[in-house]
Structure formats: C-alpha cells, structure tokens
Image (tube, rainbow, N blue to C red):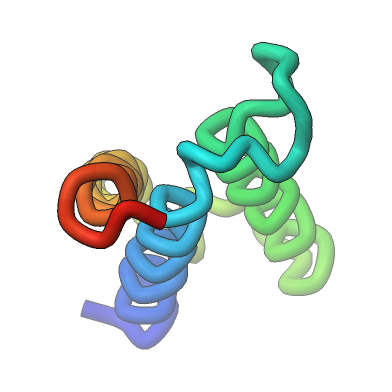
Length: 92
C-alpha cells in the first residue's frame, strides 16, 4: 500500500470519529444539510478535489477506487462508533 493510501485511511477514520463525537450536539445547526455527517463528507470531497488540484493527477491515479471506497466505508463506521460513544457511553 502506498503512503497516500495509509494517509487516506488515517484521515477519514480520525475525521469520522471526531465528527461522530460531535454529531449529537449538532454544532452546525439543526438543518438536514448541517448535520455533522453531511459536513464530514463534504469536507472529504473538498479534500479530494484539493488533492487533485495540488498533485495535478486524477484522484484514481493517486488512490485506487477500492481504497477510496474502503476509506469511505471506514469513515462511516468511525462516525457511527464516535456517535455511539458520545451518546451511550460518555453522554457528551
């Protein structure tokens, strides 16, 4: 696995967990589009666009599609874990 793949997995996992921990408090507002899950994936998409611009290559040349998909799945799982921890265990 390339360094980009490792960084990809790390960033989406840490980001998903962080946004999951703040998910119940709704820090961005009560609108559907302001839900932390939506904001998280918006930031992931912006990050991929920035990566595309900075590196000057299409994203699939930097990160294979399978790595992108598994990273998104890991981000969703970490978001749900963070949300579970915040609501059930910590009571934040």
